[in-house]
Image (cartoon, rainbow, N blue to C red; front, side, top):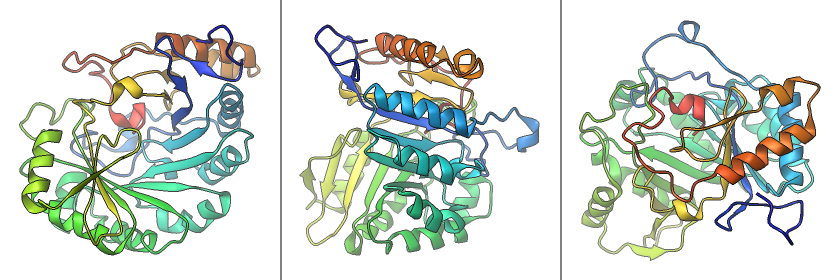
Length: 332
């Protein structure tokens, strides 16, 4: 909500947080079937939502006018959107937008990377939960490890690109690989981010004992690397560390225990054109009528302000508060 005395170009919620960051899930389609996210079914067996590129670019323009400075494109898998390069280019060219980043599983990244760099992409979060081909197949149900490892190696030597590696930790599956991931930070300036599982998984493996909390991840890190030095991280990187002699850094993302919510400044746009102010807030606001009825800018602004006004200080866990949703629809 706007507060008196504040510029109309700034959105401030009722807790005084300036909302400056939006994550946009451009499609719910995905070319993997990770056990913690989607059921093992074909895309034709489920509804696929996808944002219209022209309308989305217009929405980003309105968001920028209202104070959004950072845009991240997510999915599903955003590189499955046929106009993803155009969306990056248009977002980057939007007055007020300072950074444009993308989260991807990397399968299609090699073929799009040059075009994305030319479009002005500032950074990539690559989701890769294992460095073992067999475990990759077990987790994702798809045999695509070699292509993802290839593009990771390419990213590590791509100048000017901020690279973060998202590693979702699953107890008994990939927690033994912590040292292998940390080793990547020795010669490369990337951030390896170990992440907690969240309860948005099509009701598959949540509550099956695979959850690995931030404190357990931290304990295992320090068991292997007692010389870790704490540093100041960004946004959700509540636990951030550096190893002496390493070029990169390490972070732990407490995605479920969420001790960073009080400083959250983001909104999410889902692949079916709804605005979500908090992952753990069951309510969302439908943007489709305002988007489809001649692109009603004033109505869009109104609904965006409603979402900001409804943003909770700290979304409360209620078991599986969004039980019908997977992250492919909400946006990673």
